[in-house]
Amino acid sequence: MNTPKVAAIIPAAGLGVRMGFHKKQLLRLEGVPILVHTLRKFAACPAITEIWIAAPPENLAEIQEIVSKENPGKSVRVVAGGARRQDSVENCLRALSPDTDLVAVHDAVRPFVSPELISSVIEEAAKTGAAILGILSVDTVKQVERTRILGTIPRERIVLAQTPQVFRYEILLRAFDKAREEGFQTTDESSLVEHLGLEVTVVPGSARNIKITTPSDLELARFYLEQERHTPSEAAASSGAPASPARGRPAKTR
Image (cartoon, rainbow, N blue to C red; front, top):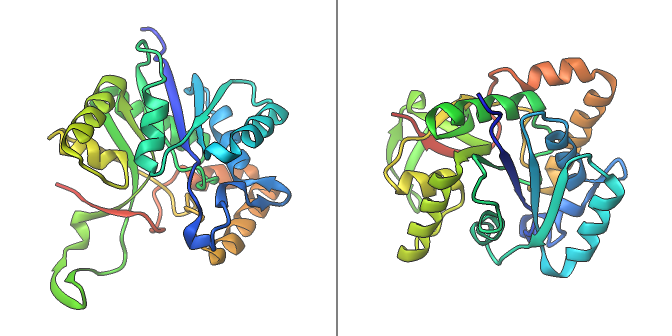
């Protein structure tokens, strides 16, 4: 059996509104941009063939230089991102070669995903066509309308969505085509594929796979980075195990 060609897309064109308009992907952890920490995880994953980064147009040259200095050992291409995450991912997707088998989309500011987790969700998507990382919720989840509670969603029907989210190339392309035709907008690629009426499976993620979104996340990120540096094997092991939840998009399971 041939090894699948897997392209990783890292949308990194966000404005960082919740970080006080500091572009969080370029914020530094121990002197290294968060984007580079994330890039290193994908460069270290044997299942990844090539990496595409969607950058803010005004930072295109800067990010190209950062990647060049990093010299990750895999093909990394930087393209201009769009106004929304969905636009940025689509810009990369439409630049991929048609012989791409699988596409893994990952948040630029989730630098603590392990290569093992990346491989596990790729393996699942190769079987099913569409798979994401997700973790269980230990909090009670309420459905609301403004400040009024409409109901309580059973926790066993909820996972918090993480990335990477991995899909067969042709499935993701169809999902973006349909979204464009219908003006459908959402916050992750799984929602686009669900909109096609296709099933997406969930692979257990990790509480360490945090999305650095607010200033308070940086302190936890520094702690995790320190752990990785001093106990890399333990950090990788814990990243590959099912865990209690971190923040993510709640997704109903069937």
